[in-house]
Structures are given as C-alpha cells and as structure tokens.
Length: 530
Ligand code: BGC
Image 1 (tube, protein in one colour):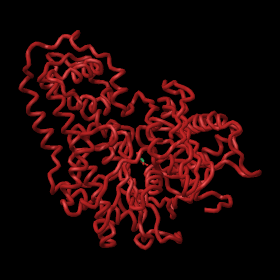
Image 2: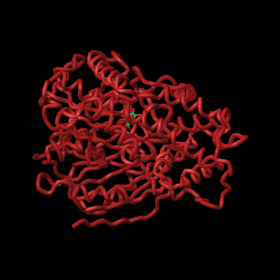
Image 3: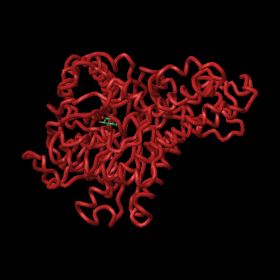
Image 4: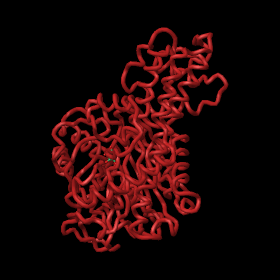
C-alpha cells in the first residue's frame, strides 16, 4: 500500500516542497508528479498547471470579426514548411550522420561535434543495492534533492523523499559560488529534515549521487570538469573547474559533511535508473529543456580510451548529441535565434529539437507573419517581440485545443502576446506549431535510430535481434503528445516494421534521480555487501 505524505505545500518559485513516499517505483511516479516548479524563461511542461496561469477570457475578449488573414502569410508558411521538411531520405541521412559522428567522437577527443564522453559508469545497477543515499539533480529549470532508501533485490526502493526548487533566474547568470551555495543550502535544509530516522555506522558520511546535466569531461566516477554551460546558463567561474570540488567547497561553507560518490549526467542517471528495472535498456534519451542521449558501449569500440579498464568490458558513453549539426533542415528563424543566443554556433541539434527553443522558434515565425502578413491585424502586437515570451508548454497547450473556435489558442495568444485573433489566425498559429514540433520530434527519432544503428553495426543482433529498450525522460517528451507521436512514427518509418518491432521507446519518470542514488550506492567508497 502506498503511503504518500506531503509535508509542505508551497509550489512557489524558489520555495522547496517535500514529498515523502513509501512505495513501489510506479507508485512513486505518482508522488513525483505532484511537484511542479517553473522558470520564467522556459517554464515547466505541466500543461494543466500552465493553463492555470492563463487568464481565460473566453468570450469576454473581442474576436476580430473577419475570418480572413492577409495573403502575405501564405508565402511565409509555404517557405517554412519547405525548410522544415523531414522526408525519409533526410531522416536517414541524419541517422547515418549521427552514427558517423559517434564513431569519429569515439576515435579521438574533438573528432566530431559529438563529445562522446566516458561516464566511468562501468557497472550498471543490479538490484542488490542497499542503504540510504542522497541524490542531487541540477540540470534545467529546477534543482532537486532526493533521499532514497534502497532495500536490495527483495525490497528495491523502500522510500524516497524529495525537495524541488526552481532555480532563480539571476543565479543562471551569477557566479559559480552563488549557484553552488544555493545548491548546498538546499541540500542542507533537506538533510536536516532527515531527523533521527537513519543511523549510519560511525565515521561513515552520507553519500550523494550528483546529477549534473551539462557537458562535463569526467576524470573519474566522482570528478569532472565543466566544458561549457548550455540551456541558457551563463554562470561565471565554473567552466574549466571540477564541479564536485565546487560542490564540496560550498558544502564546507554550509558545514555539511557529505560525500559525492558518483557524478553523472542526467542521461546516465536515467539509463541506470531504467536498467534497475529492465535489463533490456541500452539507450537513454532526455528531451526536456535541453536534450542528450547516452548508451551502453563496448570498451573495445572506444579507440580514444587511454588506459581506462572496465571489468565488465562495457561502459556508458554520454554522446552530448545536443551539439550535433550535420544535415539538419534549418530555417532563417533558427539561424536568427542561434545568432542571438548566448552560445551562437553551438548546440544546434538542441536548438532545433528541445523544449527551451521550440516556443521561441514559433514566436519568431509568428512575429514575421504579423509584421509582413498582418496575421493579427494591422499592428504588430508589442509583446510578441519579447524573446522567449512564448514557451513550449504554451505550444503544447494550444495543440491540445479541440474546440470549434479554438478558444484555448485564442486565450493563450491573448494572455501571452496580447493579441486578439480570429479563427483563421488561430489555425495558422497551430499550423506553425505543428510544423516546428513535427520537425523536432522526427529529428529526435532519427537521432535515436542513429545510435541504435551504430550499436547494431558493431555487433549484429545486439539491437534488432532482440527486445531493446530506449529509456526516455524530460518534460517535452512527457507532456507534448504530438511531439512524442512524431518521434515514434519517425523511428518506425526509418527502421521499417520488422526492425522497429523490437525497439521499445519507454518513458522512465525520474529515472535520473533514483539512478544517481543507485550509482552512488554501487560506487560507495565504504564496504558494501552487494
Ligand atoms: C546538456 C546535457 C544534458 C541535456 C539534457 C544539454 O544541454 O549539454 O549534458 O544531458 O541538456 O538535460
């Protein structure tokens, strides 16, 4: 019987909320979904909640009487669709290029856009892990702290508790010290709530699995140098430093005596978490604010290995596929958005397919249609000129509108961009959303096929000869049904029915948090009997 108790009930930005659950993994999913937090920049993907923030005017707003939109919109739409098209040959090319870039990145550091980072995770969870472990998760709009009680094969995940806080915007642009102090103080507050419940043997520190979802050059399982920030973070003083050292220093400042025993990317945490329940998991993909994928690789397929030995003969490789750029169908809107970003020329795949950017691409298209095609009447709505004002969860909420007059679309446009729209304009807005989302989902699908293809080429039968699971996580995948469908359809289209039959694309909610604690357990520096 699941016992779920909410200790605090605030969901305000910057305030933590603790959820305790004593349950099975599946029941725990339910508990996780009770917490939400949003960032002003990109937002969460909880559609029902995002509707809550919309002041639905329904019939109180003036709907422009004419249903016609200017003829100037049509050529923009035609060109957009042309430039975003993802026919099968293009998808095949993307999949092949992804596989080729993976090989080049495995051959030598800097060999391709794909960094192909060694995770130092050489053994995957077995189910025997036991004890009390913490996990820290920093990677997007939210920061999370978890406490997990693992009970071994019989009891599995006995209990989990977590706090979630949205990262204040200013910290994304502040100093490294400020950001890590914020994390360490969140961890300290959460650790205090443990009370006297658990007793560790004398001299033993509490151990943490640290999920840090940015490109890190791992130097061991518990250390790694930040290569660069992504997803809109521009914190000074962290790039080039060991992020575990940054956290340790901040924990010292808090007087907190805990130890990081595993530093992992969110994809790696997801793969480990999913593998705990299912031995067929070979690949993990995150599609949220940012995007990335990792997979299980054979050591003898990694020429750039320098002396690193894995007893299992395998390791997890973090591809950092967000940096992929080969053969992507890009529009002028993508190019302008990239040029205006804080990392121009970087993370092009991420900027084409991930949640941080889809809303912004659509906003740019609508702005042009408003300016050159009078989409919303004679004047251009002022708010539509604000970068990132339209968020991907808004697109998803609009695309779920099945009403005859598309009143949700109208309300969102009114609330977000201050525009009054007629039915034709709303239909056009939906067509733009669909075009951008279809391109994103299909390209993500092609990326997945690229990874599977590479693995199959190296060991025939490894992937398509048996059931293979791709573990998926991230708000975009979870909360955007159209995106998910486009992704799955593209995988089927490229692989064909026969091969795709064996490929299971499965959502693993919060695999990454549990996964990080499992990896903290299996990499514990203390004696363990599992
Ligand atoms: C980061 C990856 C991360 C992904 C998903 C990307 O921006 O570079 O390390 O896994 O986002 O969170």
